[in-house]
Length: 340
Image 1 (cartoon, rainbow, N blue to C red):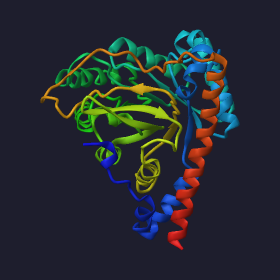
Image 2: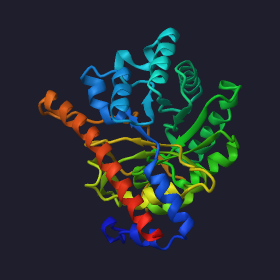
Image 3: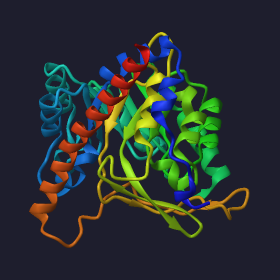
């Protein structure tokens, strides 16, 4: 199934077909969407440029965002994982003084890493923790291991102070994620919907969103170019608005989730220009394919000038804030126009 054979969704027609009440709700939510700075938008600056978690909260404040999403390892020696409890508490104070919300992320569901991420998140005053499995094995094994891992969240956080999200991170399909959530049966556990990660699991964005919709609590916003890979699809992240993803259509559907209140609590602005992820699920797969071991996500810095590349990344992060806000204004305007 070639990617370019897929029809481009008409998000304006979708809005026009909504009932008046839904259009009004969509307009209001588009104008007040909870946008969060994401540390991966500064991935190279945090690895090679001396950027720290404190710099990220300064960026979020300057852009008038609602909070930050940061991995426990972001910032190298300055990362949350390297901070003693006193420093984590001081970081919590800095986030709170600026009126921001903190979401912490980790790239594992295994007990040691997950329990440590919970400890860090609680000490730093976070409200949410994202995780995803990174196991090598058959899909059936990965699903069962992840269920067992996530059932331990009640042991790691017995007072239920955190919300948790499981992200589709390129290998598991939407159906497999839902199977995990239903088996774990923790009311504080939902899904984090990434705009592009379903591509690598050989799923299309809007059908994947429709399947995951009842469980989506948070979102990673990015764009990418979809590339053929061994019969499946790889993705190469690019500047938002310059890729293949139906960003406006996805925003419309995500903003509509929830009746009395918005279901999506955070949109993390995760510009990843230059990040590449290969196909992990193929149409030729058998009923229980094998997933090889893989590292946590990283972006290759490339052979060019380091200073220029770091400036390019920072400019892209700034530009994504503007691009997403413009897109949200267009959605709100369209909803208000049709409402009138």
